Length: 206
Image (cartoon, rainbow, N blue to C red; front, side, top):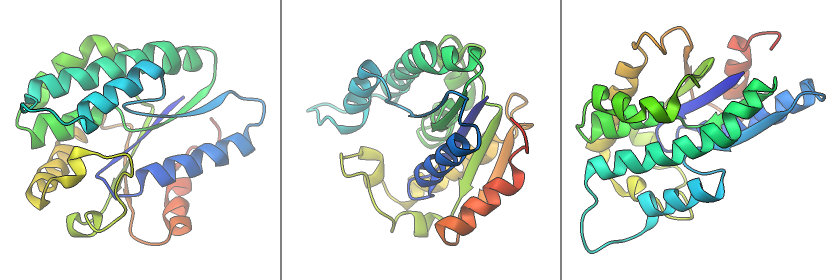
């Protein structure tokens, strides 16, 4: 099973994805259960993450370049870690997926969801999430929460950008390949309160 957490910076997706990972490890001690993040979780994908998000260049990175870099990191992670784990009967809990590219590069960067889907077609293949937990939070509140200590250019962007990201997630939730898996989670409240909302919609047996 492939479970994805999505949402804006500060929405709690990273925290909640790790909580679910620990919960599932305790519940299914004999299953292979892993936690990954996009981009990252392999040496190559992590290097691409730094290139796409943290490196400072004298020239601006074109939005298409950005989208292809994320797709490249995704291809590495999905094909070398996620897909083999799922095929062997394991459970993957992921912090982000191609859905993030739909929201950020497709909508907020203005490339369009169709272009992002085409760019990611080979990278994603048939590795589609069984469940998408989209952590929903007010834009203003999200921007006041802790930033990425390793540096992330997206966290320096303003309110208008994240309003577009929110719209991107709304559009993604209606795509035929995602709508059945999609669960919007109100991420206001304590970590335990939010996690209870996730458990409430999690299948009893996996």
